[in-house]
Image (cartoon, rainbow, N blue to C red; front, top):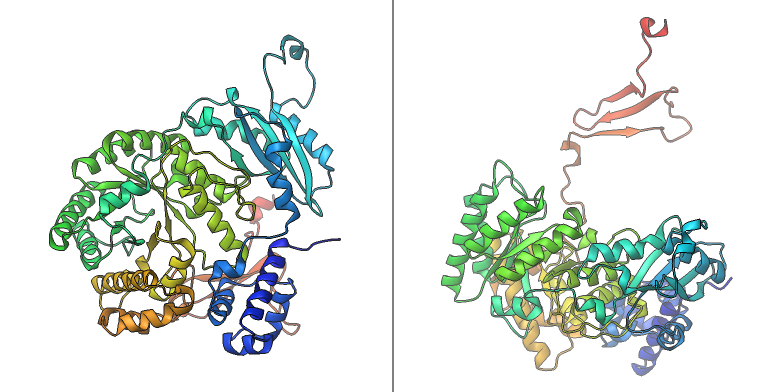
Length: 575
């Protein structure tokens, strides 16, 4: 069985070339990079998908960027077949083309094509009403290409007539396309939306350029911070926290997606104090500042009411948890933002992990639905595959008439018909040490989220904001003067820290390479007050619980408890 990964082969090929150009042996590279010789050997043989951290160490020693190391696949069967689809499938510019992937399947390509065709039309059985339909006048979804892309993986392209989708409706588009997922277990990798339908979508109202205009920042990434803690702050103290972050140099602050309207911090009071903080920060800094208030609520009418209040207070941006409110509500809010010059920020993250829809496809739909800013994951977390996925998501958000990028799950060329670019907001617990690699990977047109390192600075959030702002400006200045951030980033930061006490303290405080999100912090586990349930006790000598019992340990007292999973029956119940 052939299970080779073309992406890993490309990585190995690029690494061998870079080592040859640097005249460096594997032993020398392992010693200088800190990556073990065993791991390096597996990378060179294409047997392992290395972490981004390991690749960054190798790239730094070789004096190349991460993109040069990972590169684009040069010889890739899947890529070659994909690039020929445009000419091979005979589609017209009016058809919607969707790429479906069946994994771990026993079907042949022909059987998979028939299966998806039946699911897309909803015709699992023939009925007498079919004789009443003129199929020459009423086109139906049809498979146009089916191919085997892995040992047990089949990819099928299905063409859907655009007449099946209601104009301007993301809900209708998803409903029609995802019909083919019913009872098939398929995943939708990408959808190519034709110009005739795409022109009916509004897209972002402000877009990438509008967000830059609102902050009056050009030529560098924007910095953002989410306010912390999520609960416990009064609206007045919350407003003060916003002012401290903006006053220290952050460009955009935002509400947490978890913070809606709670008794201790109701939305009306919070909006009022945030508005005052914005006005004060703009006045004292002389810069454009933005805050995104969370308007997610129980119904669309309430969300629009809160968006109206944000517009009245001149806050300028609103935030929604797009995964919670749904596509229909999202488009309703986007329509309001269009008519009131509000920047619409959408929660990405977990929203991008949306069941049968690929992450880059969800990002594309969020952009076409009208989101100006979409939060995405970090290209520095995970392995080479995760990094390519993030690049695919970023391409879908800010690309203009962009070409296919199969390794990032962008399977088709996509015309954008003048729809504005959305701005990716890259988060994931970053601190100043991560900024060189982030800028090297994503460029300038991105929002770098650094709320943890801003709010968690030992000298306070204003100092944390100053540290991150100083780091970004020093890196951009060095890059514009010819420095390679992937190679020289660390020395640039240390040099800048010599002129900025806040940055020096941040670099000392945050461990190099550590993330501030998705990690366990603190050592007081025994004070959690939680109860841990163990269904079985390990070890042959340990006494195992009787049938129907669970063993629990109270972490506060350390006392071991036995509890029946089902309470024993009483004599009355036995009768």
